[in-house]
Each structure stands twice: as C-alpha cells, then as structure tokens.
Length: 193
Image (cartoon, rainbow, N blue to C red; front, side):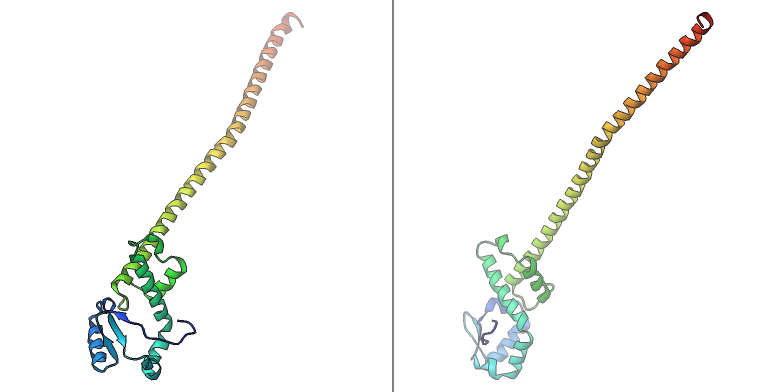
C-alpha cells in the first residue's frame, strides 16, 4: 500500500496454476525455506525477508506500482465474479487505461491469473462495445441533423419559391392585360382616334 510498510500476502494456488515455470521456482524456494505452502496457498516464510533480502526488496521497489495495480485488479476480479459477473463492476475510464498500461495483452500476460484475465478482457470488450455504440449513436445524430437541416431548408425555401412564382404569375397577368388593352387600343385607333 501507499505509505505503509510492505507485508506478505498469501498467494492462492489458482494464481500460480497458470504458469508452469512458477511451479519450478515455487518448489526451489520452498526447499530453501523461503516460502511455505499449504492448502490455502503459498506464503513468504517470514516478513523479515522483505526488508532483509536486498534483491527481493529491489524487485518490490522496481515493480511497486504494477504490484499495487495487480492487487487492485485481483480484488476487482473477485468482486466481479461474486454477483455473477455483473457488468457494472467492470473497469472503465482511467482505471481501465491504467490496467491496460500495466497489463498489455491480458489474455497472454503471465502475471495474471485466469479470473484476472477474464475480468480485464471483459472490461476491454465492454469498452469496445460502448465505443461502437457511441459511434452508432453519433452517426444517427449526424444523419438526423442532416435530415432536419434539409427539411428546414426546404421549409424555408418553399415560401420564397411560392412568393416568386406568385410574383411571376402576377407579372404575366399584368403583361397579358396590358397586351389586350394595347390590342384593343390599336383596333380603336383606326375607328375612334
């Protein structure tokens, strides 16, 4: 944790079962009495190893941020599995971005146990599904906006076109009436000047 002394944490067997190389290392460290194993999992033989074993201390310091995120991911995966893989408990946003940064390619990442892989993969799939849904909604909004713009343009241009057509018809009628008056006047010029 942050600003707390490092402590040992039991490692359940299910987290070790994913990596065959871990079994070899586990056996060697158990024979050297640095680790103890029981039915619950594997434990560090004593917490003093954390502070007194310089190489282990260096590994912890070097990988502290990823280890912290890994613990958080383990707990989130456990909570996700409890209610039947509730989608509301999946990582989103900044949490998912940090997890993806620390554990790229979760399906193949050797540090992740099967439940953690499933959780992170489900989170990434949910993000992709949400992204596709958002893109689909954006496309619909753009199409709707374009359609409404076209309808509005037609609605605004129609009265103008009708007004112009009415003006043109009025001019034609006026010109027709003027032509008839001119014809009548031409016919009367010879008989009634």
